[in-house]
Image (cartoon, rainbow, N blue to C red; front, side):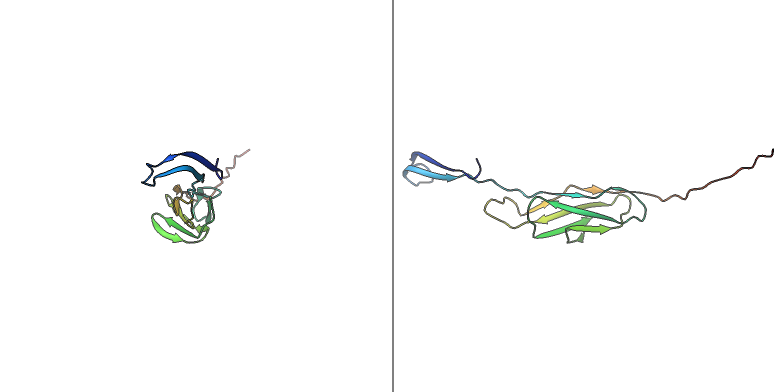
Length: 130
């Protein structure tokens, strides 16, 4: 189990030339892989609507890099912009390395926006003679 210390009695003479026989102590660690998801209330919006996309990291973060259509776009935990139809957004997080951290960056899945044209409602009135 993660965090446990295990003692093993045996012959370790063939382990990296150590020539050791007796008891070895192992500490079980949990390897950490950072992860980030991104969220916004809706990716299907009306033309001209400003949206805020939020990064949801799995651990403490030292840096954010937002990209819109592959180009750098922001460095905060949120990114606010007015999307065009088909815009694609991702967020890369940077985390502090540590004894069990297996990677120092993670990239979110791509979020694609659908922008709908604004329409003007119309009404017509027809008179019928009586």
